[in-house]
Length: 355
Image 1 (cartoon, rainbow, N blue to C red):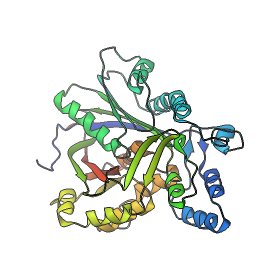
Image 2: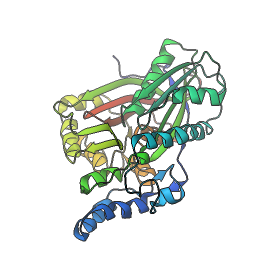
Image 3: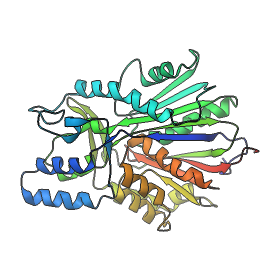
Image 4: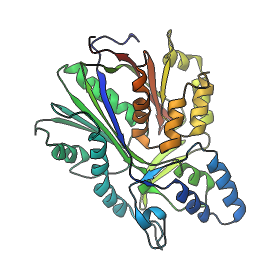
């Protein structure tokens, strides 16, 4: 398949993003440190967390719940169960999704709706709830992408693009919404606390079609590393969804990206000039930069999103694209990483309205 993006390629006409009001990053640090059984470990955690490249993270929790005060959602004798967490998801996920959609110019004429989320389940699903709240026609086609993790944002875009390729008259609304803060776990493991300290809540909405100007989407790519299935896992337990993020991930990722065959797949004969890399953490971005020998400023947009919002799972790469779109990049690639360890990507490039 050619790496050139065709003039009639599906394109992102608009992107809008949203986060909740409550910034919980500083309070989380103290709560997490209080889980550790001695001050030496607590000091080590605080030092390591301060180097994570994150200043702010937002949560749908509010008031005493967000402050992690005694008697609040997470500060009880027993951790909240999965049912309690899913009740919060059902109450807040649709609202945050609608907040992001409200930032789009218009949803008039939408023919297809694609929704990605891995932090909650409900039925009728988010796709039906969003369609009803928007007053979309009953015949609008819907797709839900669930539990894929952080790279679902790329899968969301590729799915929407496939719809437009099969039906050039389609107007696709694609939405990613994640409430990662509903899955905090009590732990005395520093690595687990650091991993939880990266995640946050956020939503992004995208309009795609076959006409108008925007970021045109081209060839997709997928890569699953051999013998890496235990590096990133996302398990449903009795007290929410438990994330395991191995400290080996950055090293394994850097090694994989340094492989000439992998570099050929990603870079090709004409390497992209713009990089929309999912900020799965500072060390992950460092590994991508090192593995692909990128210039020091190549991942500035990703690092900026990480600093201002943290890792919002599938929605995060869309925040990065939103930051890059005003630059009208001629050629780029979006990459995201998740359970597996696996990578999903899609090529993009700006296309004018007269294309």
